[in-house]
Image (cartoon, rainbow, N blue to C red; front, side):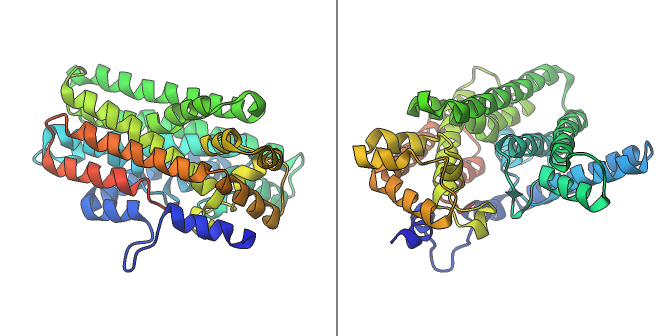
Length: 384
């Protein structure tokens, strides 16, 4: 049973249906936002080409560094944050406004996301991202291949920090390319800055939790989910889109977006918690059971400790020390046997219900309502 635990629970998290796409999020995006995703990717590619050329003029090595940062941005991803921002905008303006006016602002969120991912991978000492070596591991490997002096790991981490910093600057620069009436700029910028502040706050709490797991709790784990994931993945992008459209901060739609975004964002992170233990590495791009290897104090693990019998609790104390696949699978079984997986699945379901209820409270473009309804479900029934 232990050897089958990861695969079995991965299916439970995101059941495969005959003829269905392997990725429900991609399915919804394909159905509603083909032009958006293409537009975001083209906007990013054109912007980054010019930025790489500009940095290459400083020094040939800078060109290589900038190209590495560009590749981090363009290396796949679902474009979730630009998508939620788009529907936040579309829900206010309807279907007649031209998309190109706001495309740079939507694409800027993907640069912000890359900043967060690259720094997060350094903090977590992650080896892979989207099935490829993380930025710091790749830079370390190039350091070794070139025969450079010094510690390759230290070099790789320094390069990754700079890549993240550059992406943050690029995000600001690209945001300024959006065609937004001057009267809206301050509100747009305030929303954008709040999103960045909350991202850093959530990341700090995440780092603190990993170093103070003995004093962590389910409530604090959910607080991390709220600020590290819900804020900058769903809630703030939705509100950012509404600001781009000129929505009143006190309008019923803004309140609905706030409720919806918090609920879906937390559900998104709870789904990530399950995938961090039971996900298929071929789909997630990360080793199975990574969170158990590191002892990451997610809501799932905190709930497992809360619900565990004394014997189960003793087994769970090994989280953070297990290394082998068999040990990880056995520990994953213990987590499931406590009832924590079922509890997290109910928490996800409750949050999706809350999100859909929130959409019913405000007047919103019907196409946007349909898309957000689909995304609320798809974002929490995924394999990566």
